[in-house]
Image 1 (cartoon, rainbow, N blue to C red):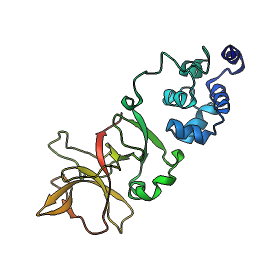
Image 2 (image 1 turned 180 degrees about the horizontal axis):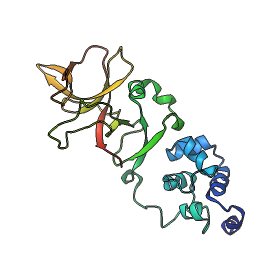
Image 3 (image 1 turned 180 degrees about the vertical axis):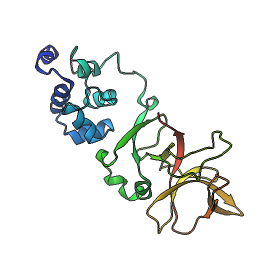
Image 4 (image 1 turned 135 degrees about the vertical axis):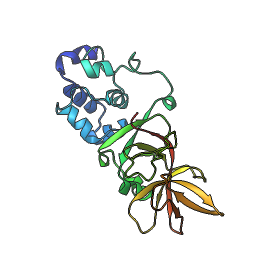
Length: 229
């Protein structure tokens, strides 16, 4: 088979990845988009900087290649059934989303159509579906730190996984943007006397409630929070 010849002609993962990508007619950027990783991640493997990327299975799936062959050169390259690839439905598998800045989050509805894999330095898996335009935000500041702990506690450095396509209701945790500001904020959406506010759950925060005004925009709704996944 063709695969037996490849074992002697492509000796490193860098050479195998570059060769397989060429067979699929994909650029580095196209493969990165299909695998939901950064373009630099593909370039680092092909240049030999990274010998075993943590995104190996995602890259193999995007190439429709055997991850065993891609990593070690064993077996045939174009091997759809592979014991190392989960046969679970795609909806049950983690999906990779960009980790973006608060500025990018504030501009998300405007930039999402033009967002490219290389625009985010980091991508992470999420255990929940965030929709086609989902993103992950690393929290800054302590406005959402709950001294009592518990599940409603979002300290600085935690990652929040956001679905922009779900309408938020009072009681939901949301990413919101004030019209005249260029940054987004993570707060709890609440209703007080019939009007909506953003609530900072840290009782020591100097301004715990911010009233939503005309022009304010809810960017997305929290679906999952954690340190990493």
